[in-house]
Every structure is written in structure tokens, then in C-alpha cells.
Length: 485
Image (cartoon, rainbow, N blue to C red; front, top):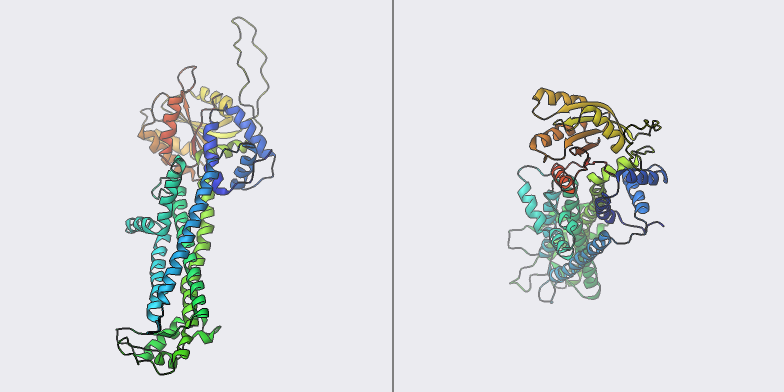
């Protein structure tokens, strides 16, 4: 039975969590299962492959932290839209306020419904910029005070029971994919509120124009020549002057509609009906300079948010390990049981050779294994045939480490790094792995394999220590795997 359809965001939450618990499943069993599932569907992109695998691997498992977070995110989106609607109605009523004593001031109306929005739009564009030096602190402040930043805070509060939710909006996350997701989710919520604001303001304006008798004029304490104001109005109306010429106030209307608050007779007698001709201009100003830019940003934010959500799923070491297992040929990495032959008994016949996952280069760090033992370990536990073995660390000279990097970092194969499980990873090894990544490029897998002393298995404490240390590298294509049965 397949899983119910899930959203990409839901999968980005649930798949890594499920894979973390799946670590207790013997490695050979994971390889057989994941390769078998991969065979059941046609080749697809990495993202599609993971999502198709997920529908089969967790069939019937309906316990989903992701589903709950999806509901919370949807609720926050609706709340932001609702707040935008309420704000749009309130500001429109204030901007179009008319009691018959003075006309609606077009200057104030444009300042409230267009000018303020353009200022916020300029700040939003700063958030779209990369994390440039000199702007980081300002961008962090903007991300906090924007409506999307408030929405992120509400989301974290509503989803506080989930440890995953706390990391979703970490603007400073070491994982680049998490930072991108936070950025585009915050922008999406901000634009959802802004679009709702503009739609509500436009609907309110049209209703007021339709069902009430409004008179428009313009007034300012600045020295304003009606001819100069007319030129400014025509410049503002340039985007639609060809399509809707009736929405471009004429010079005569501009001159006729100037008023002064202390001069009750400043408007020409009988001009009230003519002054209503400003309303198409004001409505198209809100559409052109308020609604359309916000709609464009909302579409952009939605598209980039989906891409960032996909990256959030793929830029995850456990998912990289899964994709490596799915791409493996049919494999049986170890016998189901290991029976020691009694002393003096005949040597059993050699088992038929087992298929191998693929070829890999290897680095033995700090003499954790002998080269022959590394080949055996790799074949029986990881399913890799080692194409080359280099040795590094353990007090060797830097020239030896550089030679190991040259040999292993050819980019032709994934790299298995054997390290002593009983020793915590030191900065020397972390630096070596960072340099190895630089030489390999971003796509090749690095498999860090802590190996135990003697015949024992790697302990849970040792494994967790290594996983935490490797996590500090924030390398989505580096993962820890012991191949333990």
C-alpha cells in the first residue's frame, strides 16, 4: 500500500527524521531494500527519486510530524493574509475618507497606498540580495521586523513541540539550504500579506467610489506649480496612458482640483462632479505600483521557496547516503551468519564472489586499519571495491597528507575515509575533510567510516560523537556509515 500524497515540505521534514531512526536497521538490509525500491520505478531526478522511494518505504506509516507542520504553516499563511486584508481595508478607509467638507487629498492617498508600499518594496529588495558584507546586520534586522519575520516567530511558537521547526528559520544556519529556505519562506509570507493588503484596498476603493459620492483634489504645503504637478501626474500614469487614457488626469483637472484647507471656496464652483475624475488614476496607481510588484514577488517567492524546500530535502547527509544505496547494483555485502570453522577442520569452499556496490577511493586516517583489512572491511560492510588506498594523519608529514588528497580527490569515485572510532575527531581531520571536499567538488560522496578496535562493533556513543562532529562541517554529501549488521 502506497502512502497518501504528501507535500514537498512534509517530505523535507519527515524523510530525514525517518532515515535517522532507520539507522538501526542493518546496513545490508537497507541496501537491499532501497535498491529494490529504486528498481520499481523509472529513472527520475534525485528529488523525484527520493519522494518516490519515500512513498514506498514508509507505506502505511501515517505518523507524520511534517503533516502537522504543514497545517501550522497553512494556518500562519491564512493569518498573514487575513491581517493584510484588515490592514488594507483600514488604510483604504483612511485614505479615501470624505466627509463633504474637504475633498479626498490625492497626495495623502498616494502617500498612504503607494509611497509607503514602495518604501517597503525597496527594503524587500535588499533581502533578495546575497549576504553581502556590510548588509548582513541590516538584512538580519529586516528579516526580524518584516511581517514574514513575525510569521516565522508565530510558526515557531505554534510548532515548538517539534525540534525540527526550531531549525527551519535559522537565518544563520551552517546549512546553506536551511538559510535559503528561511529567506524565501519569510519573503513568501510577507508578500502574501502585501498582496492581500492591496486587493483589500482596491476592493474597498472601488466600493467607496461606487456607492458613495467622492470628490478628489490635491493639496500640499510645499510650493507646487499646477503645471509641474500635471507633468508629475502624467509621468506616474505613463505605464497605462496608452491603454487607459481616461485614467490620466488632464492639466485642466489638475489646475481645477487644487485646494487649500483654510479657503473653503478654493475649489471652483460646480466642480465636484469633475473632481471625481481622479479615481481611475488613484486605482491604477495602487494596481501598478502596489499590487503588481507584490504579485510578481509572491510568484517569485513561491517558486524559489519550492526550490529551496527541495534543496532542504536533498542537502541532507542521510538523504545522500540513501541515494548512494539506491544507485547501488544488486548487492549482498555480508553473509547472514558468520560461523567460525573448528580448529583443524578442512577449509570450506570459497563462496562465490559477491556483487559490489561500486568503486571508491579510500583514505586510512591515523593507521586505523591496515590496507588489506580496509579492502576486506569495504567489501564486506560497505560494498565498495577500493580503487586506491592512501594513508594520512597520525603524525605524518604534511607532504604525505597532500599526496593522499591528490590520490583520493581525483573526483572519479566517492571516497571512504577510515578513522579510529575510539578517538574523537580532531580539527586536523576536519580540516583534511574540508580540503578533500574542495578537491572533489560538491557532488561526490565522502563516506566517513569509524572503525572499532578488535572484533567489537562501534558503540552507540562513538557513532553519535562522530555524527555530531561531521555535522559541524555542514557538508550535505558527507555522511557517517559503519556498515554494521
